[in-house]
Image (cartoon, rainbow, N blue to C red):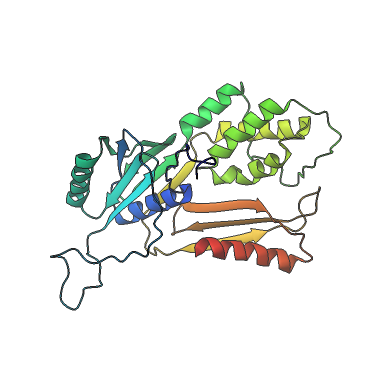
Length: 297
């Protein structure tokens, strides 16, 4: 709209949990994921009309006009980066050539590095990690030689705004939490601790900052951790949800959590404080389950 966002540029991006789900599917099917970099980003227009899709001429069989082909091609778009995989190498190569005829792009071939994430592809196995990024975080906060700890936070520890501790500079604390939040892209084991500390970006104390450093010490001992997707016999969707009750000391709100997998590594997860104050443990569990169902659908 002119005067509002007329001069702004918007580019479509795939959700990170969608990308992880694609990796899980590729590991199960034994597909190789290719990466293409488009040199000039292009706009995405929203269609207001109802669109119908027919089988291309020559592909439809009599009595099976509404069925899709046996060969599958999956394309995930993140601004100007394309992830391409599928059941046929010939189909992937054909897609690349057709795209090169329209857009100026670079074929990066097998996906190895994406959005800071290192991707190791093997036969029916894909390992995703942020080893390099985690190393840079430790270096940034001068924690390269710190003593490792076994857990990212004390299980019984509860944080609050007014904890009596001395307030600290918000800038390094915000920087630390921001770095750790992106690290949760492949490290669901720290999502609880990071999410809890992110609630105090404007009122952080020495206790909050030291808790953040505890997460760094945990990273020191688990620097190579990530997500491993592998082929399984029972490839089906599994989801789990849970919650605490009145876990937040400041407003007595509860926290919901859920995760999903196909039998190996989890590809979707969430840890979030509920928007309402629940009156019972049954209510908080229902809110958490409803959030998980919404994600599954």
